[in-house]
Length: 97
Image 1 (cartoon, rainbow, N blue to C red):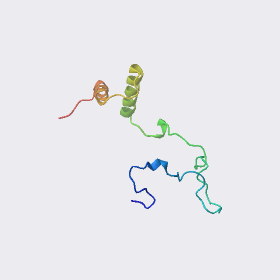
Image 2: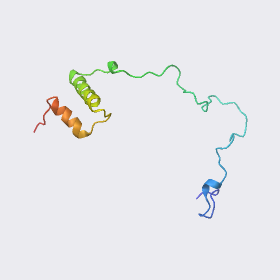
Image 3: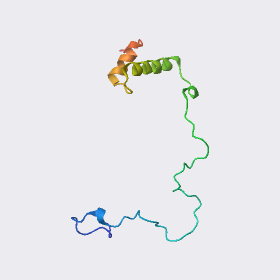
Image 4: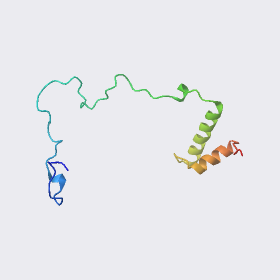
């Protein structure tokens, strides 16, 4: 148990002073990188990967398109695993023994 913690467990810990209030730094020394600015530290625009950046086989694209058709026809964003299995079987996939 910390020395700063109250000895009585009935005392609400939230009633103690909040260390997040105000500035905690004691000295006004410059810092190399200000991390509290709220800006993204990465320089340059963030890029999303498009599907064209991946090498996908025709089977993978067929599966993705089947999933997207299911989502648009049902209006649901996330199919259940049972529905995914139905989509696969609809594409002609069978379980091998």
